[in-house]
Length: 114
Length: 114
Image 1 (cartoon, rainbow over the protein chains, first blue to last red):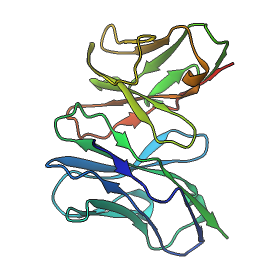
Image 2 (image 1 turned 90 degrees about the vertical axis):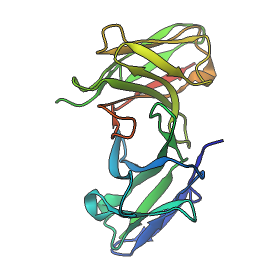
Image 3 (image 1 turned 60 degrees about the vertical axis):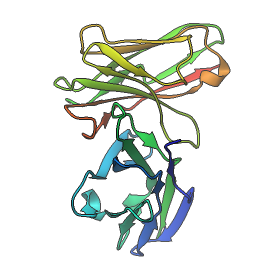
Image 4 (image 1 turned 135 degrees about the vertical axis):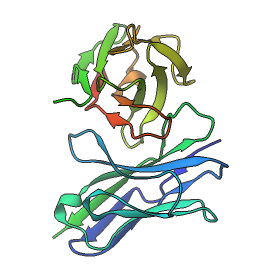
């Protein structure tokens, strides 16, 4: 079955440290990948997406992600985090042949400590 | 504000009652999706509309659930004979054009079934 796996449910990190949030997807001929962020008491907001082309994609707030087909991964990175990055991050995929419905991972709670 | 709106934001009901939620998508978006998010999980797809046509329903959508989008604009999600297991956040999202376009999410309706 098509799925998205986020291995880390919680990631604590100190302010200004780098962070990587891991995401793996099911191997597929066609897949589009997304990272969404959910701040406390707010709706989901798109951080970045990979459709095709360059495997390194840059998003808002200094985040970037790299599409790795051989490892079926789409890890999210930021070189230096801020307190304001504290939120829950969801990796999601649209698989080819679907109607565009997103398949989400379980989410990773990023806690940035001073 | 031209984002996706949902009403109500919170709903508390007793088991066995019927509830109805409303979603107003971004006006020019032809695609509308409903998702359900339970505690500690990522959103799960429920159903999809393209304009007024309901084109896909998840197996999660039992017979007690029905959704409509009568004029291709706002949508309603009704749950009949609610059960405690229906307690969740119900999210609506809309997007334009193609299946891989960004989905814009509303703030959600939190349902609590007592």
